[in-house]
Image (cartoon, rainbow, N blue to C red):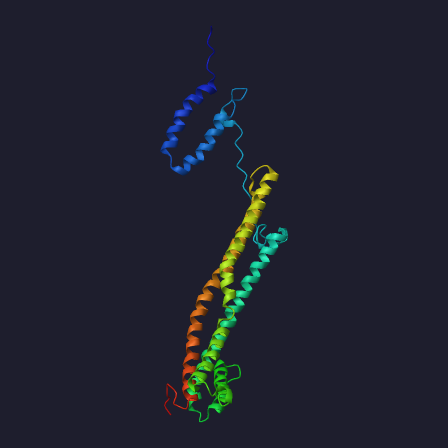
Length: 296
C-alpha cells in the first residue's frame, strides 16, 4: 500500500502549532487573549484549492455588540413602564404602598408640628402664667388651642362643681386631683393619636411589597413558560417590577418605624411638661403655692 505525500499546508500547520504555543506562553495576557481567536480562525480555515498560503484566508468577523442606550431614551423596565404594562393587581399593590407612605409622612409632619406647639406653650406657661394675679385671667390669656389651657379650664370647672351639694361627700383634694388627672390623660391620648398608623405601616408595608415581589416573579415564570426559553428580554420586565415593589415597600416601612420611635420619645417629653403643669395647677386650686415658684 503506497503512502500519500504530506500536503505542504499540513506540514506548515504542524510546524506552526509549537511556535504558536510558545508565543502564547511568552506573550503578556492581553496579547495572548488577542492571539487566541486568530489562532482558532487559522486552524479551522480550510486550505485553498490551489495550495495558496492560509494567511490569505478570510478573517473572522468581530462579535456583535449591543448598542448602548441613548441619554434621552426612556428606560423600558422602569417605574413608568411597570405602571403602563402592569395588571390590576400590580397597580393596586403599588397604589396601596403609595397611600401608606403618604399617610405615614403626613402623620410624622403633623405630629412634629403639634409637639413643637406644645413645647412652645409650655415655655409660655413657665414664663408668664404663674406671674398673673388671678388664675382665671391667666387661663384666658393662654392660646385657645393650648393643651395647658384645656387642663387649667378642667381644673377650674372641677373647682366650681365641688361647690355643689352632690360633691360635699367627696374630699376636695381627691376631687380636684381626679379632674386634673383626667384632663392630662385626655391630652396624652391626643398626643398619641396617629402613632397607631405609623405602627401599622411599619409592620405591614414590607409584606405588601413582598406580595408585589411574588406577583412579579409569577409573571416572570409565566413569561418563561410561554416563550419556552429563559431569555433576558422575557423576564427583565417582571423581575424589575418585583424589585421595584420590594424597594417601595421598604421605603414606606423604614420612615414609619423611625418616625414612630422618634415621636414616642418626643411625646413623653411633652406629656411630662403637661404633668408638671397639672401638679402646679392642682396645688394652686387647693389654695396653696405652686410646686415651682418663679422669681419676680
